[in-house]
Image (cartoon, rainbow, N blue to C red; front, side, top):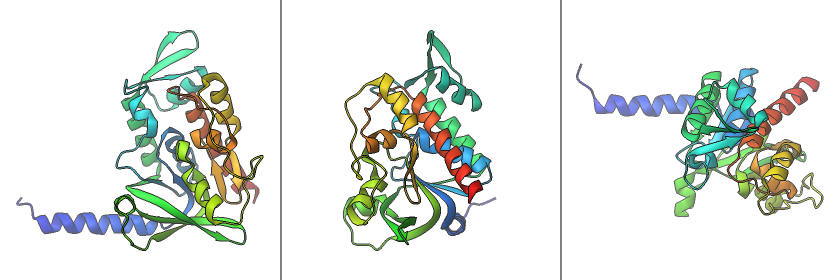
Length: 260
């Protein structure tokens, strides 16, 4: 068969357009395709929820791709290993309570599970604003990341969402928009993003899970975003808390939907 370039182009444009249009309204919109966002997407999609992840970079995986300082191995504790086991990711015990895994295998496998469960990843898309109705976040305002990077004056498009999850890591990108543009207090001591503290792995791993919660009407926070929002320390290249946080936020959203 002779390949036709125009047919290839039409296939990409038509199929992407179909996918994008189908996901302009979702049960949950996750912002950030790092480990917590991918894990949350898997458990939500597995529960039958319509889930879209918006990632500003071309690649997925967040900080997990590079392990620690580009040594692409990650460390998890016993509880974190239990999450990796769900995805059939190979782990090796280093010392009692410490397990290592290949960073690339971990990211690609979790992403594969999430997408096969039904979650859709839209990469190279940035969230520049949110939609708010009756004091509740009801969706996202998105643009192409290259448009944002180039500073072009191009109007964005919108995504309707029953829930939004900020898993953008240290930057708290969704929460910063809400803080800056909306007359809405966050569920923190100050009513605003408190900012992350210096690295303390043990404390940060515990607080990452504790701080995973609903932070304002329509918005949940998970992963490193949770610690940054509530003033917790960063954890460095240990990822158990991130994985557990993704599972927890999915469970919170599922439980809230059931109680409505």
